[in-house]
Image 1 (spheres, rainbow, N blue to C red):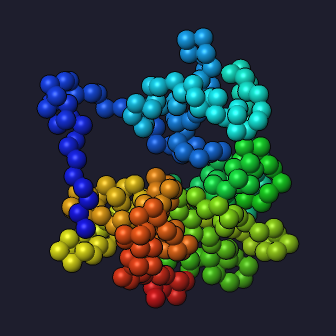
Image 2 (cartoon, helix red, strand yellow; image 1 turned 120 degrees about the horizontal axis):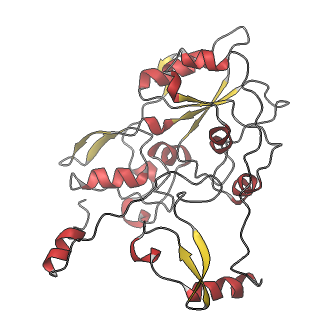
Image 3 (cartoon, rainbow, N blue to C red; image 1 turned 120 degrees about the vertical axis):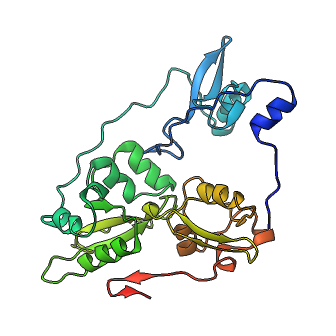
Length: 293
């Protein structure tokens, strides 16, 4: 079903006789300890002698230019607490994370290029947390006690995924557990690492966002071949270039991925017209240490 067409901003500006606005520079780096992007958050400030809430970027158009006086009042009224513009959360350093399990990075480097194997503190902290309140609180407070993944890998082909899984299934105590992760928007702590008492193996997060292409689209038949790591926003944009839409638009679509939708049987805001994700899938390819199913 083709999406509704709208004139591009540049074309609309020309029709009105106005100038074409310059593109807005944005930083698409994800924020660590809150929902959204690093450059975009709510901030308090004084505007014309009055406290107001403002958005710190122009990612969402004019919203980034407007002081929201009523939102400031709404927060205080609904939360029932007094707020002060000068009260800000301190920026805490990242907590120390345990050393990576012996030999793990070397084993992973045999499966895919070393530059796509990550073991830094921020990557390890974020891989096992979603966007639920408990997860955001752990990240915001830098809770050090919780176990984290030993490493994060980002394959870019099916062959690399299989290579990682084969390495995970290695015997003689050299194996490790693998947890597929996508946009990390779950609200059930689904990607959390269990304690060593529950499972002493090293844990590796398999970041599927390296597989994020639309391989082909058959608009006539309404079928497309899409890799699992593509985000909802990117998928919507690419399908629109072919004059079609998937119709799947969950609240998390800027970050959540096609694979995550399938794994969680996700639903979107247009389900009444297009259905849930299980109504849209024709076929899915699944790989194991033994190969593809």
